Image (cartoon, rainbow, N blue to C red; front, side, top):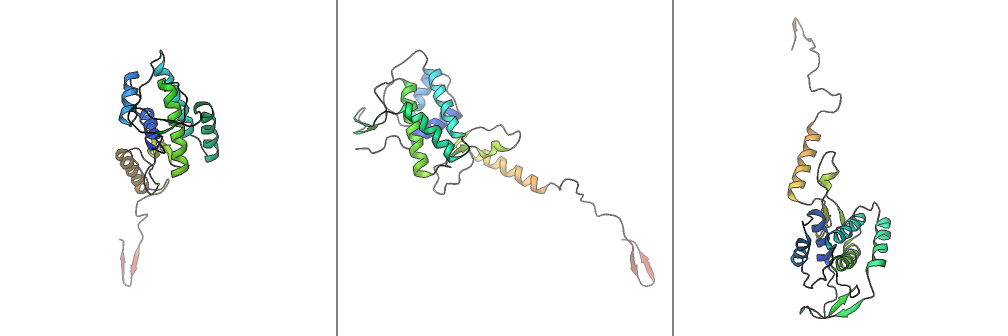
Length: 201
């Protein structure tokens, strides 16, 4: 029996949707398959918009400024999205737990899976392991991607190598730049006195 089908794939799926939003419902469902979901979804008229609302709601958890605020926001979502745990066996996955009711619409399923998966990620790996890419903190940097830190040391700050390199170059240039109001000139010429002679350097 699987103890936790709502593992890290759920929060990685949420980040993937937030960072690269699909153009249509089929794109969202295809993304769920990429991250290991096998179940079918009941189609509704507003799957695309409803799922976008789910991701925007999740981003409020990502952007929480303190662990306490993050917990309050996530608890509020789980209270309305997650149902009592139940044992299920579908799509040859083996017996495992679901934290949702029988509503199979795309947005409904993703909301329950993502909020429970996020709670498990934060409580097992650390409340700080969900953030925006650090490169985007610099003025003018366009990156707003979400980083789900699943590294062993818990120090992942960038969404990609490209962002990490761009930020490293920016820090290097800032260190190399003269201090504001400073000068690199040698200053005024001074006389050097040598007995019997007068030299100017």
